[in-house]
Length: 447
Image (cartoon, rainbow, N blue to C red):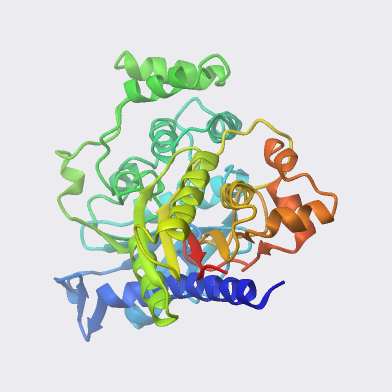
């Protein structure tokens, strides 16, 4: 590998790491939450801890453990106990707060058990208690308490269908809320009449509170009708388990209760706060790129859509920068965030970030000194152990030398095996944070 290409790769990884550090849960919470003796300050609000008999911590998500750990430090002797659900392998040592490992992205029985423990904890809270929720990406799958009449298997089947058909995270969450007893503000209902503070790491486009982990502690704007529209949009209504179809039909007929809306009194004593988001990671990556001598360009933190289409758009921008120095001159670092989707048609193994890099690398073949990196900030990409991948304008040539056919791997959604063979998987392990994806394209000077 040429020295220039290696430097671009090393810089891309360093810039990605800088983005991760900016959204580490401990640092994010401490920016917004502090304690001075009997007073807890949360983003400008002051809570007198002497007014509360018990203080509980509850929540779910890939970053729930480190978020809970920093609250244990801040609350110290005032913390009564707590319960959080996390993805398998995302553990952090805790003292007073119990942890339940569970399945993600498809919920499992362990998640159901952990959710019941959280509900039991919240139902024990009364008006003299304080509940602090910790919610991060993955929280929706990790809070799988089905609506009455539905089984966990019904939810699992519905989730698999939604993930495979290319539905957006917002659409998936709208469905999850309406087949759940905790999502869409219903966890706040369980905590009422206790005072409720919820700290969130946002992993969704635009940071809407009601979509992060399916909004368990905030009013829900989605409806049963929207769920029906999602089924029809993707042509999966007939494939959805019959009990789920029947439950949605009851909701449309007014026979099943809607999720709580903004005027519900359960929200009178709640505070919901985003402590870290994709934008913070993007801004940190921009500063890191500048320090390394690149001209940074932030495209957007709101990018979504089909992964391959987004990848080709990014590749086209990189080519334009190389040809005309527009919209920024090389050496350049193009940065984007958000979360794309993959419509699965093949039988291979991969994730949206690995597929992004493969599609972009195919388009960039022959364009020297261009590197592309895409990775999930949580350290996982789809059902793989990789956060993402890194490629460049030589990826296609290296693949052909190894008798690999990049378009065939892409067509089979087999990006993981492709980059595994080239040694270009980006494996970080669990990062203990989750604010969607970070994509980088480094365009060096013309050879």
